[in-house]
Amino acid sequence: MASPSTKVEFQISPMSPKTKQEVVISVSLPLNASVEDFSAHIQSPGNTIKDLKFEEVGDKKCNASFVPEFVGQYEVIVNYCNKPCANSPKTLLVAPRGELKVTITGGPKLNNPHDIAEFGTDFVITNKGNHEVVVTDRSGLLRNKFVMPTLSSSQNFEPYAIAVRNDVIVVSDLENQRVIQYNKDWVPLKQIGVEFLKRPTGVVIDSDDKIYVADHELCCIRVFDLNDHLIKTIGREGTKPGELMKPWFIAINSRRQLVVADCQNFRVQIFNSITGEVVHCFKVIFEGSDMAVRGLTVDKHDIIYITAVTNTLRPRKKVECALAYTMDGEFIGRLGGNLSLPRGIHVMEENYEMLAYVVDGGHHCIKVLTL
Image (tube, rainbow, N blue to C red; front, side, top):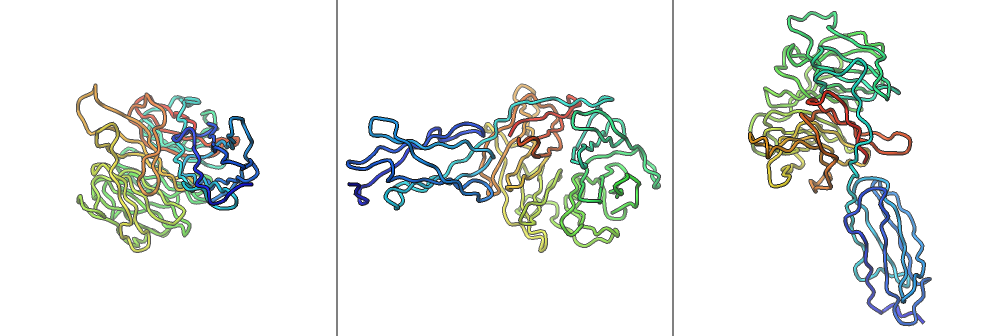
């Protein structure tokens, strides 16, 4: 007969898995215990709970297993006679596979692209080298393109970042110190921020249709409504928490917090989007080097994905990569390799598979990596 007072621990292998990799939970059966005395469940990102069944595998051992589908934190809970095992729960961080699935070069070819976003069943890409925004299908075949808007301007169109939410589309125009708002038919409606922006980089639209714009030169985030009214400014130039140095891309997470690639402070900062106060910040260090954070996005489970380059002028030591972090700043893993001038990054689910679309400016393409 099983004794619930017996101290029982379980093991997990591997302890640092990647998505789609089987994780095995093993328990040695105490004297007089049976496999039916054990139960387990997994709490995955998004707080989905899955029950697991143990099976006896010989040598007085029993196993249960699962295959993680998503990047992020999993909690493993194992019970013995309806009571938690001595080392339960355990936390696993599941890393991305980061394998190159396909490379999108565009048709016609991309030239110095900067950002990518979903547009219905298509993609929209800021093709900065050709001074245009292009719409492609999922394979990269051209569907449409847009060059200089009919709105007044004295400089070449320099599309940098793009954000799409429902029928609202905005593109930051770097050299013309503005953001352009389009309708769903890509008719330019208005200029935003002309009086307040110097070098607009990242853009994002929140659930209230407020437009957040990172300003690389002014080292702040401007917030506008759709009528071009400045609502507030978040951050200022500096190195302290809440201050910014050359911000690049930005995102809004499920908690409606503003997540910022604080490029030249080599960190990610998270702000309360209502009060503008900093909630958390963490340094980005990879292989012992400070990383200049460039592209940034968050997935539906609030995992942060960034593109970054090492802060060094020595080419042989230069690292250009995509990395994943928890919202608390815990490093999860690296995505792929062989990136050159990585910029915007977009995460989405396609055919039941999570993918990262990384803009590779140096190779003039989009690299699709498995998560």
